[in-house]
Image (tube, rainbow, N blue to C red; front, side, top):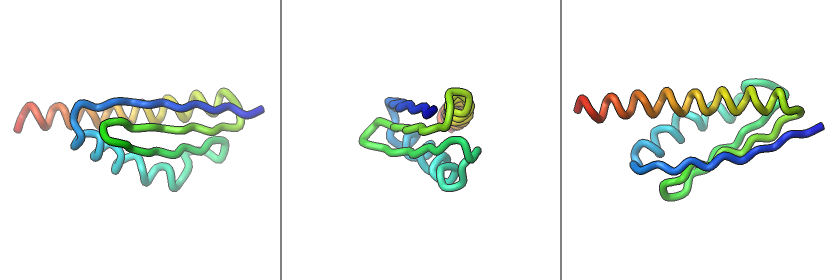
Length: 84
């Protein structure tokens, strides 16, 4: 069984998109698990994550990890922007 998902996130700030892309890109070179693979792309103000996993459990785990990392990074960027 194989499971796939594509997630597209739109950002208002291009610098936030760029920072998040740079933070995630190294993670795609060394997979969190041998059961899933993730690619990230950016285009204008959109971040696209393409997940390919061996099963739905691996897909869910990869989705949760990447979305959590994105949320954490965005929260840090928002805090830094407010305090600048």
